[in-house]
Image (cartoon, rainbow, N blue to C red; front, side, top):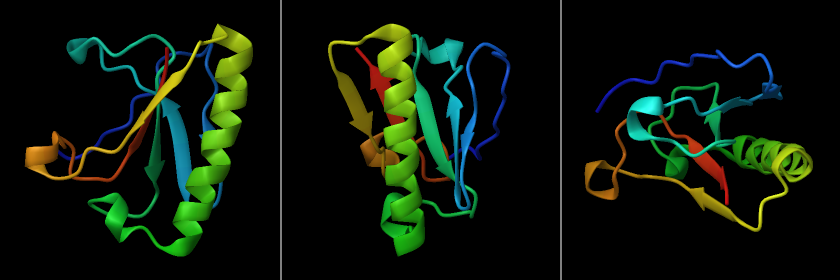
Length: 104
């Protein structure tokens, strides 16, 4: 698995952050990521969501709500996909837990 590296290139979209998590636009053009997609990433080096502590889960939920509110206003999506890929068999390519938020 690859290690995560965050690139923030779109000055038009904000970065969301709290004590344990950061939420950034997912700018993975190589994999044709959908417009407006975000990822929430723990600041601690945890390989899967199963390794998140209680505070990290709480902070993930808070950021997810903030990002959804932003995406609702900007894109007015009809729905969302939320996803964690866990382990190679589960499609995880990055050796660091991250939650995908994809407006549809």
